[in-house]
Length: 212
Image (tube, rainbow, N blue to C red; front, side):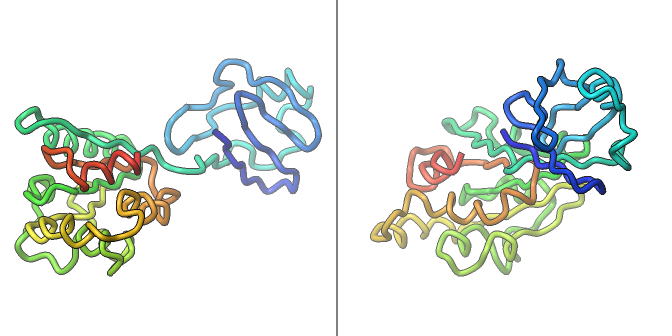
C-alpha cells in the first residue's frame, strides 16, 4: 500500500509498507503514528513522530496538520452467495454505514433483479443507463453512476436489461474482465466499491470476483 502525501512543502513524502520516507531519509512509523487507517487517511497528529525521527516537529513542514493521504485505489468488495442469504441487505447496509461514516462509497448492483437499486429508492424501471451499458462498453462507470439519498453514497444501478449481458458477452474476448477494466477507471474516486452479485456463479458473478 503506497500513500502519496501532498504538502505545501516541496519535499516528497511517501508512506509505504509501514515506513515514512521524507526526501532521502527513512524511519519506521511507530504504531499508527497518529494516522487513522481507513480508505482515505487523515493525519491527526504527526508531531510526536517527527520529533522522534527528525527532532524538528512540524517546524519545517508547513500545514502538516492539513496533509491529505490518499490510497492509490479504493477497496473493492464482492458480496456473493446463494439466494436468500442476505447479499443485498449486506451490500446496501454496509454501503450506507460506510458512507455515513464519511467514506466515499460506490455500490454496484450487478444482479438483474435490481434489488439493491430499488433498496436505495431508485426506480429501476425508469433507468436511462445501468451497469448493463457499462459491461457492453456503451458507457463509462462515471456516466452510469447516480447519486443516492445517502450522503457520500453513489450507485451504478441495475434492472432486467442485465439478463441479456451474459448472452451478448459470450463471444467477447476477455469477457471475465469486462467489469475489472471498467472499474479501474473509477477506483481512485472512491474509498470503497461494493458489488451486489446475483445468486448464481454465472458470468456476472465471475466478473465481480475478477474485479475484486
